[in-house]
Amino acid sequence: MSRPLARLRAAFAQPTARSTQIALLGLAGLGLFYFWHLDANLINDDEGSYLYAAWRISLGELPYRDFLTPQLPAFLMPGGWLMRLVGPEVWPLRAFSALFSLGAGAFTWLTARRLFGSGVAMVAGLAFTLHPLVYYFGRLYRAEPSMLFFAAAGIFAFARAAFPDPAPTDAPVELPGILPEPMPAPSARRWLLLSGAAFGLAILCKLFGALPLAGCGLWLLVDGLRRRRIGPMVVDGLLLSASAALVAGLPLLWFRSISANLEQAVLEHHLMQGSQQTLLSELSKTLEFYYQFVDADQGALLLFAGIAVAVLAWRRSDRRVMLFGCQLVSLLGFVLLTRDLFIRHLMYLLPSLATLAGLALVPLLVQWRQLAGPARGHDAPSLPVTVLPTARLGGALAAALLAALALPWTYANVVLGLESETATARL
Image (cartoon, rainbow, N blue to C red; front, side, top):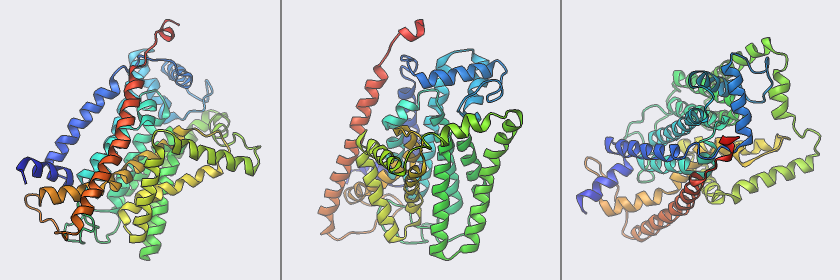
């Protein structure tokens, strides 16, 4: 096989310096795409209220005390401080959000690269940053970009705690292109504390930041029960939740000490909406919410592929993949919410869904391994000749799946980026 294809295969399947260079070039290109026409369209009612709150903060006022807002301080305060430096301009605060969104994509890539190799990481990073929800809301001054950034950072730190650096000989590679399962090892408690702190900041940006934290907690529970490590499971769970509670709780307690309106402005606004609804109407509303996500932006393809990979991981007791499968279970939490639900509320799930989508494309790695042969310095497991047609068919199917996601998303994002208007600026 030609040497260029072999090098490309190695960069795709192994975490090498070349794969890092490819990822950095991709991040630079996505950065240009995210900053393209960033403030060409200013019409957004919610964003206008958040910009107003940031302007009030830039004048030295405090939320909940001097004015009421349902938004949380880790999102509003940095925006107010930035506006104090640059003045009441929209572009810098939108750029601030775009950097958070790109940072969330970088953490998604880092986590997938560490656990599954560069191929899955490239797919995961692209799927996350190109998703229309991320591209639309990630370029506005809203709470979602900062919440996504800290949540993705929390999952990365949690993965570092749960899976210390694996040795290549620890376990056989069950799927080509996937890094081996590490031997059971104690959690790195320092990374666990950092993970909880990141999740605490995510909650301080938007309350939905608690859902990825709950997914990690569920993984600790399932993994501890399966491996019969009850004591370490309890200690790890307490460390994770305590660090998150401290980081999220202490600032809120301080704001509560200076304003009696905090619960009414934030908690009641988010948690008590629609509390008069019946159980049947609540369930009907939640099912419609799930359908809206499945119906929009190839959501069915993304979600069902993720569920299929998670179910397979459960049957194989794949601890690494189950970390992301447990995130899907947090979807059931919306059944308990009476408030109005919008598709953007599921953005917290996109880093995990993007990673699971990358894992669904593993047959593409199988095909490349057969076509390009073993990478330099690595021995590729030989597959029977009867497997080759299946591998090639799987590779073609994986390429079609990738195109079915990337092409419509890219087209929708380009159309969105081309939108512009001047009336709001004149107003």
